Image (cartoon, rainbow over all chains, first blue to last red; front, side, top):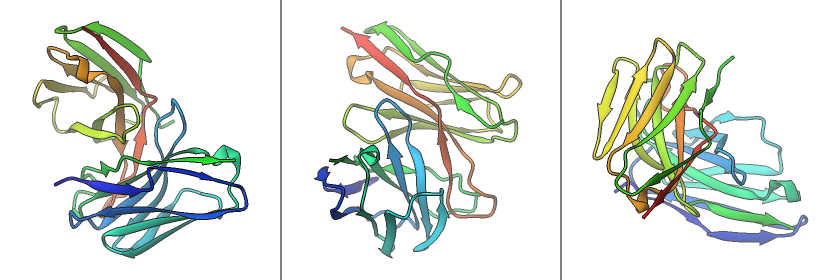
Length: 116
Length: 116
C-alpha cells in the first residue's frame, strides 16, 4: 500500500478565513512533505517533517502553518491567504532510510485551493 | 547553477509508438533521479528512479537512461498507450547527507499526448 490521502479535495476560502488541509499515510513513513503546485508548473517544496519535527521550511510565509500531530498525520493551517496562494497543495511521505534522503516520495492526490 | 530541466515541453505520439522524454541537469554532484507521471487532477505518481552508479534501469514498459558525462537522463516508454497521456516530471532528490528525508527539485515537465 503506497497511499497518501488528502482532505478536502477542493477548498474555496476568503482572504479572512481560517482553514486546514489534512494529509494521512499509514505506510509507517517518518518523513512527510508539503508541496505547492501552480497551474502548468512543477511542484515546489514548502515544508519537510522528519520524525514529527519540522526539518525544512522553504521560506514559506507565516500565513501557512504546518503541524505534524503524529507520525501518520500532517496538517497545513491556512490563515489570511491571498488570491495568489490559489494552487494545488500536495502532501508526500517517504520511509526513513540511511541513503541521505534517497527514498521514494509518494504523493497524495492534492487539495485544490481557491482563495477569493 | 543547480537546475533540473526538460528539453521539450510537449510530445505527441501515436498509440503503439515508443516515447522518449528527456531531462538535463547541471549539478554534477546529483546522484539520484526520479521520474514521476502526473495525470490531470492527480498527484505525481512514481514511475522509476535511478542512482548515479547506474546507467540504465528498466521497469515495466519504461526504461530510464542516465548519461553522467553530458548530465542527461531520459525516460523511454515502450508501446505507448492512451493511458500514458500525462505530464512527466524528472526530479532530483537532494536530501542532505545523513538525513532520513529528501528534498525534491522538479524539472518543468513534458506533456505527453498519445493519439489512438
